[in-house]
Amino acid sequence: MDPGTGGAPEAAPAWSGTVRAVASGPTPDAAWALLGDFFSLDRWVSTVRTCRRVVEEEEEEGRPGCVLRYCEGPVNKAAAAAEGAVGWSKERLLELDDAGRRYSYEVVESNKGFGRYRATLRVEDDPAGCAVRWSFEADPVEGWTKEGFVGFLEKLARGVARRLEEEINVVKGE
Image (cartoon, rainbow, N blue to C red):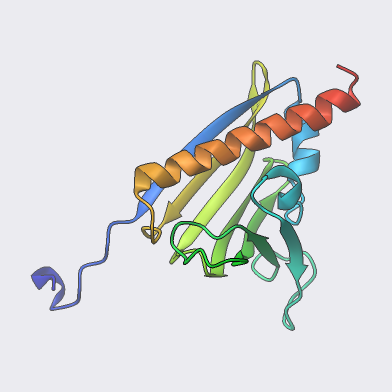
């Protein structure tokens, strides 16, 4: 208990961080044209097998806060790795800014050890072409250290940058 709050338990420290990966060749606009689709994560992140829209009764088409996606892939460290086990999360779109080439989302349900998790995916200018920046704030994720989780996100961001290079540079004929 925290004596300074009248007996309320002290909250666990929140994690936050940012990872960035450069994609050589693609322009930021070309990369955003592909990454800006909230429901295409399975095309860009190798560990996401399925990414699809979840229709909620109160949903208003395209309005942030009302749009959910369901993502599925391997179970992470936090869950029992039973044969055939699937890791999943439901994620809510909080903000979509095409001009700023970014969107923010939060995990609302998951079996992957997440409590509170909020992130922003952004495509930025870079002298080599563009960069993918992934920023997050989260409660500690079950089964991970902060350093291990940031390392995991760094690997994901590098994979996204590599996929953008493959997709866009091949289209451009490079």
